[in-house]
Image 1 (tube, rainbow, N blue to C red):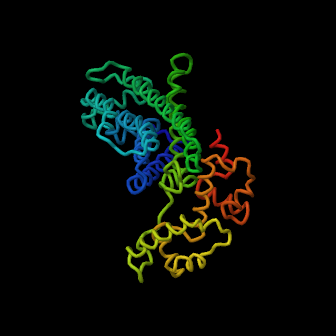
Image 2: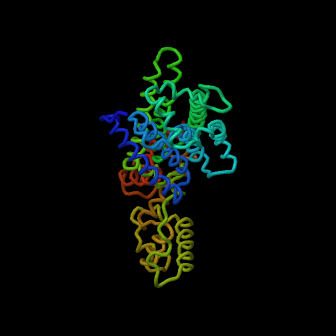
Image 3: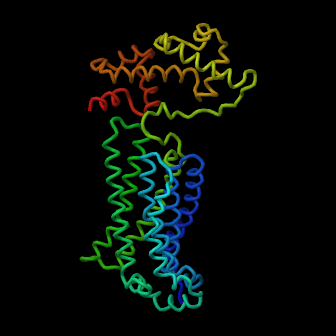
Length: 388
């Protein structure tokens, strides 16, 4: 049997390898720091393995590993609910629950219907492969089912995927509309989801076109090509949008609440942890009650004199429990003060320069940079979003 191996096959093989490696990275960080990405990693892995089976069919290499016969449907049914679950996990900030197993019912139906075929010996599967290898249309009919007739599994898989896609879009649209002010991280995720949903669309929509005018061979190649494109796109996102996959500041809402904390025990020697916690509480109280941050020239040495603590203890406490320098700490207070005034409807007619001065910043640029650092948008954008 002639093995077909061309440039397109090499591209597919490269995408498969990239997809498997990236799915391992996504899953690693998903279980370590970013639970919402666990379905994304499982989906990435299953579609990569499904592409490998598809690659084996087109290149006819499947004759060397017949145990893969009819497994592409298994990987497809694992993959189909994962993008939807990924969206649910991210938006609702939740993890796996027992009823998520209900999404595996279509896979269970297929396994029951095709168990006799899947449990065949390699020699028996090879005979079936040789009969169908040159006719992908026949292979797509799934005519060896024990309980369900030909054509059902392929059609059901596509209709199921389109239904999940619609549910995913509804969730995403509701989430976008619920964002009164969107942070930089949420903007990144929103833009990523638009591409993510677009790639999924072309995995199921060509099937409906094939019902009217598009031939099945073209449908197969369109679907396969977009599957390859999706795998490569999500893999490259590891490099261009690391916060999506590594889980850095991934949660929506107020970024200040999710600001990354340094390791608590780093560089703590002279003072024990409890002492540092007490220092932090006293610093917070003093800063909030007396609004010391509103003084544009206020420094760590001024704070040291006001609170009667050495500057190095202040710095060490902030690094250990907030992951902040003193400048970031005081700027964070200023930004929060500004946000409070905005929400109270004040300063609506003030210029950015005037607001910066009211909050304790020396100039417009330092004010804008601090605002973007902690909230992901400029003061002007934030104020407009509140108005809208």
